[in-house]
Amino acid sequence: MNLNTTYEPYELFKRNNLISQIIGAESKNKYFDEVDLVILNPYVNCPSIYGSKGFNMIAITKREDFHALDQCFVIKDEYFSIFSKSWSEILKLAEYENPSVNILRNFTASYKKTLEHWIYYYNIADLLDQNMHRDESIYLYVSKHFIEILRRYDDILATYDFRQAFKYLYKIIKRTEYIIFMLNHRSLPNDLKSVKSTILQLDFLPNKFAEAYEGLVSAYTLDEIKKASLSMIICLKKTLDSLDIQYQQVARKSLPSIPLNREPITDEALTGTCELIYSKWRTNMYTAIKENNRYLSFMTMAKCQELYNEMYKKYDIPFLSILEHYNPHDLSWNANVFEKALSNWFKLYQKVGKKPNIFGTLNELENYYEQKVLHL
Image (tube, rainbow, N blue to C red; front, top):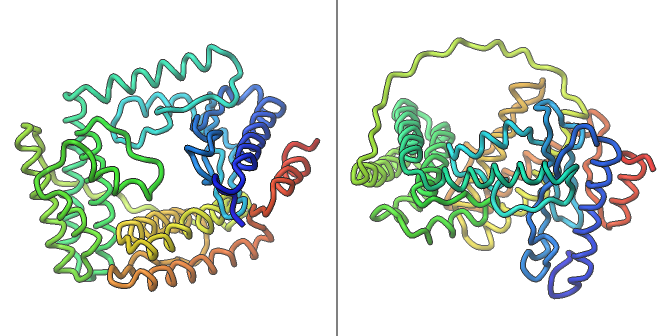
């Protein structure tokens, strides 16, 4: 049975507090010279507000190549993760080039090496807040996002296979969301399930945006994909023109081909992937069926496909394709496609003798960290 706020709120508090303590202890005892801060959403320890869902923690370090603390795990079907970001990456987020900046929004420190490190983080968050209200720089980045949408539309026009067009459609949706959130001076929700409902409630939306937005994930044939993409482009163009946001599409230079020298798959390379796919994204697929939510089904498949593509480029593994099988008229079919790919991903774990970090109880998690990580 999953933990939930109505059944056992104390257990939720205990769970979240223990996980924070484990990560904080590991940061202090093993990586004191590397980790300056560990941050997380302050509402995590308020079950009545945050609920039973898992959460992400971010370790901030000086080194861009530090990932020794990175870990993902699942407890009772809830997904948790700790991943590292360098100070330079955090500072880059403050420029507000896109609205995926939640790391600097409404976070608290569960571990800090010194007060000065927390103050520095707070100052960067303040810089982000300033940039989120600078129209001049926002309009510049919005222009760049719109140009990328135009390029992806060109790709759609050039393809003859509607299934291949889905990957370009995903990029159009992603950049469209960037534009709308930035014009509203907002950050993109971390939770994919919240993006659609949030964007449709924003104060400033182009005329007939909701209809065009839904049309993107409802398109199925190549002709429908072309029409839906063009409708959104026209919708955005009218808004950009009304705000006098300049954009000029330029010819793309052909990129040199990169040899596909892939490495053998390893235990370390797979770390965290199965936990993310199995718990977080798999849950999304079945939530989409329950709610008849095409957006959630499509975007979850697209994000999963991105992960598969990135891993395929780096490692000698079979290519897994799910996005090209997306069907807006049968979300159960989409879930079945997702499940088959997940089954094949499990086989990669078996190949290298790796087991996903999936725990049924808090005690199992504690024992894992004592034996495998903290060595207490």
